[in-house]
Length: 257
Image (cartoon, rainbow, N blue to C red; front, side, top):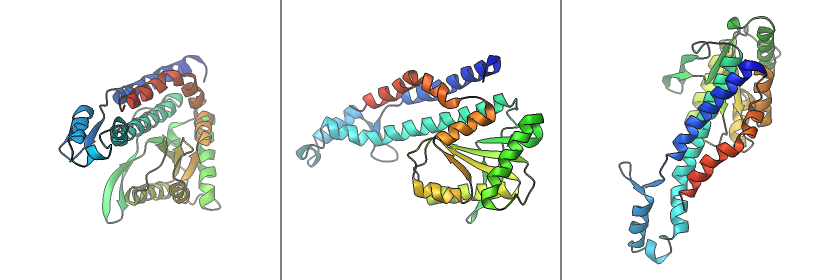
């Protein structure tokens, strides 16, 4: 997207990404021995060295301690990358379509299993808030997205509801059940349930399940859809700045050794 609008989006997205990456930078790896106690690296090494089993089998070694601490660090990295993708995509759609903060938010009380909880979409594009070619474009996207679930939409499309995942590895059945319930709520409400998964490393069994109820795009398909809908090349934006962004992750991993 050229011009001041594109520059404004780029500046805003860069600020969002740095905000989340700085939280990774400040993360201190520690080992959770209980819910109440997280042990930092130095204390962990001392505890393992004096342990009557760990000390005998090299479980007090730097390599083992790094592996022990890696779990929390990796979780933190993926959580913050997930957060930055979610917020970035929402802002790209909001700014490029000139929508308000309220317009890109959507939540509803959803029945999932025996429970009824409030769920929110990561981004919502209401057709009534768009005009001219943009409205026609998103209406066409909704009609195309509904097509795999039937010959034609059984409801009049009113919007596009977007869930954003940088990657999807979780096999949590409870979460999947809640996501399925949200997709079905959207569909019967005339909202296209669109899921954008930006990596190619996701758990394919989970994605196969989601494809039954979500209009799902994976990898570069997700980036291309964002570009087609907003004229902002999110992938190119990230690729041009990857040297800056990668340093935060490398520094976080360096703390393990």
